[in-house]
Image 1 (tube, rainbow, N blue to C red):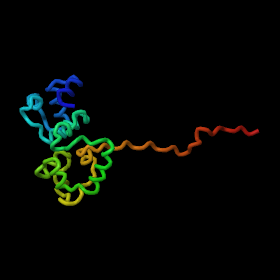
Image 2: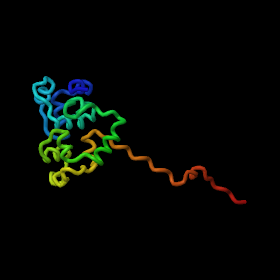
Image 3: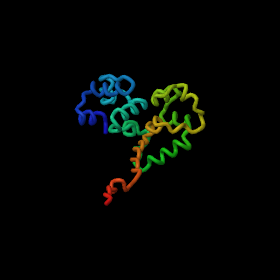
Image 4: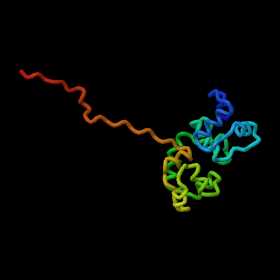
Length: 162
């Protein structure tokens, strides 16, 4: 879905959409939203991620910038992406994938301290933090419901002794 369609569906003005983005990260203005919709200003990768997160994925970073993020992952591909992040994605590859030149950009998008991101080795796999997985479009799995301790507890009745 594109930004104008999302705004229409949610009943948001350009100013309200800009306010939604401002609540979730870097400030935005009505003028900037207008420029994006007219195509006079390109959406940067950081903004595409911010829009994706602010709209709950309704306006997907993959649709906004397919040249940067590639095609929309299919639901069944998400565990495979998580496995790649856990075992092979280096910090350098992650920066390259999203077009970030420095660790500062990556830290800003991940909302992590710059010192923490700088401490990650360049050529070793990045930690599978929730922020990194969200950045790559991997959904967190809901926690499983705890099993009952005694499956027969609701069938036990008192017995009267004679």
